[in-house]
Length: 241
Image (cartoon, rainbow, N blue to C red; front, side, top):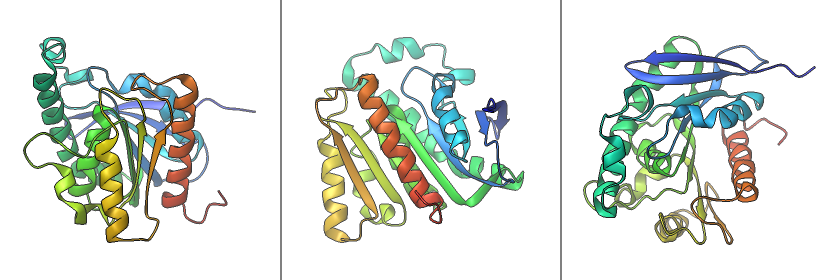
């Protein structure tokens, strides 16, 4: 009989989280932190958190800085600003969100909820930007999936400048061929550079043919299938998958 996944809202170190608990197995579990897009919050990804929990992971939805339970009062105006201005706002919030990850991982591990040796991160759009920085700031991350994000930022300490930081994490980038919001070229180039530096298949780039930023259900299903297989492979290497 299929049972419902148990959800719990928690605040850890000032960061609002939505936890989805696996139905089987003893804690600590391999944990996957999930980061949403610009202007929304962790609640929009309950379905994906449930998928993670059913696969045996502790699903951890995170409200990004300035979003959800800590939403900025002028976030709508910031999002509606001219493109370059809105992009810089988004990247600033993404960077601050990524910088919170080490404290969140330590707190979940200290409570016995998460296995600090098996941590993954997944992010969509703005969340994808979070993932590219997260890999550089949290060495315990073993698997990372950036969906519709970019490692190349217009200014500041852009993740694409730190190639060595990506070598310790299994990185999957999923981009959309016809994405005008976040063109796939930067992720494609990062993976080309990673492959040239290290021919071992520890990284993967999937470009969804014909997909746009607001992708179809079919493309999203493909992206999730790729994501779950990647997490299974790198967070549970003894799995039969």
